[in-house]
Length: 295
Image 1 (cartoon, rainbow, N blue to C red):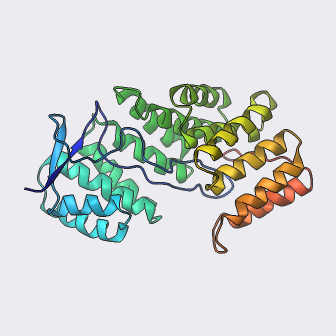
Image 2 (image 1 turned 90 degrees about the vertical axis):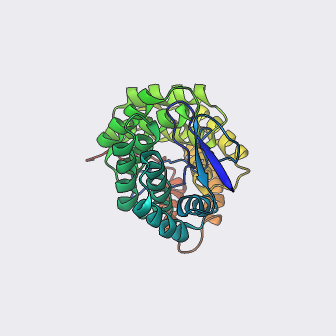
């Protein structure tokens, strides 16, 4: 029998974490790569869920992991219709939610993640993924609630940095800078080699409206490390580095890195107008300040 086993580590659920991009000018930084707890391996384990690779569930998970999101949705929908086991149903909903999120279908993704919570309320990743969607939808109070639940249910430090970082993002957009700083500092201590975490903290240090929480030198260091870890291929991270240099008053470097970030975007990329607007700010010697909810 061809099968694979999806390990459950502590209170963590299977899966791989998709990338996402924030909406509007209320910038959101979201995971762009798998978390340490997110994996699917062929090894057997007493803590895992054994899935036949030839089943709709196994094939759908494989399609999602390979980036064939439309095929994943089709197969996982069939699995949801046929499956009766609660854990396997939760698996199907989570992977389908990830596929929906990759395709920008956030409302459908959220419905799947909330169903994961209903099916397995003691597992943290349903709350985590729902929290990511709430952040992307600018529903920051709900994001804080979901991330707090995910943090409480996490049984080890694997992936905890992402959860603290995401909750920090939500607090940041709500204007609760003290709590945001606490989460960001903890996130870096938990995993200082996660580029997404570093990028989130650098953006906070570079753009927070309150000067007390800004630190241009730290922002440059964090953003530079994030870019280096991702081999300077992530436009979002280079954009953050530009904002960090602008906070330091080095607008020549800010312009240079902003142009480098724009060069990585396609002509029809939704972020291009925002990147261009920031470039004009730097030319006018103006740093970036994050807009708060309701401001």
